[in-house]
Length: 476
Image (cartoon, rainbow, N blue to C red; front, side):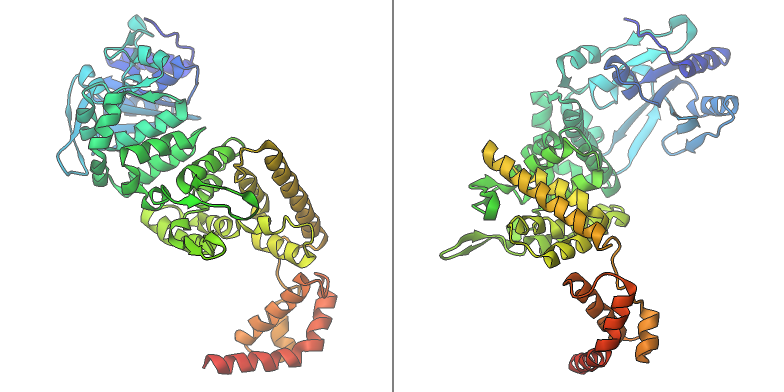
């Protein structure tokens, strides 16, 4: 079978390979995606010979630079929007309980045999004489058509060589909607604890890629069913078996929190590619197992789960080695995800609306996207009612936010001027007064404008200074 190659850069690579007597193949994900009609610019190439030397030839030709990874004997050459990765034919395997692979030279067949799945174990020749010829010794093309994820070797062997491949199976299942062959699923279940030898950085990278799939629940269900999830994200695993029972307006009835969370995540993923919004959605009920309480005469409650869940995020981010740049955003959404529901009542004060607008800030639209995704009732009329109510509340908040200039909200009278008007040095008293002005604006006592805020300060400064002094004495 021959694959038609249209991309000029691949013809150029083949020409360079012929000129230097190199046998060259496009392999792995690029071949798979080409057969699936997906054009990508990350191209893996296998060199029968010295891959690093050939990468340097390619870099010189394109006036680029080869980034060499000596330990793995691989090289990356960026060319325009393309990322060309070159590797020699090799064997690669892990010793028991080792985190580092042992890499040795091998044949092209060895190189294909060591790959994760048959759909990634196809190679296409780039040399002129055999251009486009497919080498498919493990029937990956057929598995693409069958939508099956199957390992080139016996599953335990493939997963032992690199246990991260078990997570990758879940990710590909979620990304492509493929099924994992039963033998591979069984191996993943039996070997689930082997994931512990993989570095946290690699686990997190794979997990976040899976979270970016069209339907993340597929991958999360696989990780849960095989027992892998408890090793990589125990907080999410602990959601399983916790029932939601008639909580407020949503009337959840009896729903397992784990499966409810996956449904909410899929709902949100259908409308947003924002990876950190997806992560916040996965986290939104994370503290419900911790806060589940039975209150006589009331029933089951998860009071405070949103605040505790928000506080957990810092430790989760650190353990998973996630970028702390996104921590405040996730904390904010987890902390606030119940607040819009409280505002569904038609009798809602402008003060409450202002407070939510200020608390959410630039994440306001994302917060309501999460809230809409959290509607999982099977009753169409009820779902339509909730959506209609959320839309009304959202528009009201947007109106108030724009009218009262609440974006990036803070006191119109800044700290330096407060110190000057009140004869203060930098101290808690300055923050106390600044907060009092902001509270007056949020309560609608004064508009969010400089002159009224300054006048309000001058009127109340003696009273506030006395209160601030009393508070500081209490602290002592």
